[in-house]
Length: 411
Ligand code: ATP
Ligand code: MG
Image (cartoon, rainbow, N blue to C red):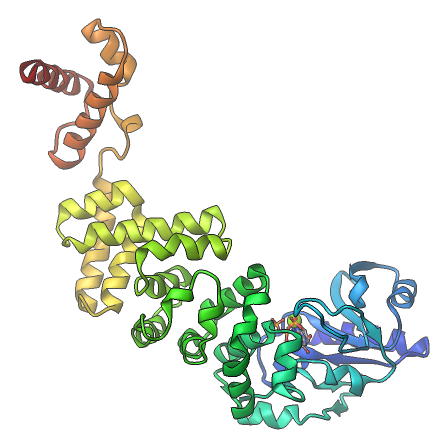
């Protein structure tokens, strides 16, 4: 990381050498002062994007319109953004114009929260006109300037406030908090993709319970599409908070939230938030595993769960039952071993695993193919899994004969 900072200083040097001002800013300074892991390094400069591109040999015009150029210094990317002022917002989404400015203070004043509005020169002098350092020490999220105005300019900032609170275990300062409550309805103008990114960050954060609590208590959640019917009066969000902090698995965290919400709203929420097919499938499977094992922790249900959802979901459910206090830690550990044993011992999980195929049935019984094949194979699979029928060709054919005779008798 020191190497990365050194390279960053090289970028600052290069810009200064060409007569421009340049500073480290934003999330990088925040995380540096907090001693947190550093993601990307943000740099602000008065050089316009074109100039930045001409100064460095390797650049990517990442967000050139908004003034952002990615500079690659020895392969490491730096986000270099030209000093900007807050543009006028017409639609709560995009500033209608980007106005470049010449001093860092003005650039810092358009940033969302004081903890994100600190700059540092290459000599490590701190520029902190909004007392961001103090807010970092106090653990406070404070809007830069008038919070209501700032949230009207870009309502996503309300989600960001809550996201930072759950990443950092910070409180939201009172005026800023009240502005979220007052302006929450404006979140409906924000593209769901952007909201989903913040929700995901809350779900993988260190203190998701803080995020969930704030989302409900500020009522901001009511303006996330799909969640309209899950307001504080209808969902036991305290239950969610109580359990969600006991796991780091984001899927289990989503489960613990969704389980409090009417199941008919799940697909609505997932489609509004544009869950990927993979994410939807994960949620579907975890609920499927839940409904199978909810009926009881007998061996037959574990088998069913393993066959229908697979080992990882089955194990997740055991963990969930432990989290929820349904089973003790030692029961959990025993069940984990048991699930792994049952899974290892399963002779088959799908009809493709059987020792006979549809073709074998057609040849053996000398009958044309048809729906009967699937019926027989499914019945055989059930017997192999649940009734200890041996998965061997001769035995399966014998059993198939019995099943066919039974069916004939039934007429
Ligand atoms: P992280 O990268 O850890 O998610 P970050 O603070 O770096 O957090 P980015 O989205 O990378 O967030 O933005 C970099 C900086 O740009 C922020 O620190 C903040 O100063 C500013 N910024 C980002 N989004 C907004 C916004 N919606 N309104 C005002 N300023 C913003
Ligand atoms: Mg960042």
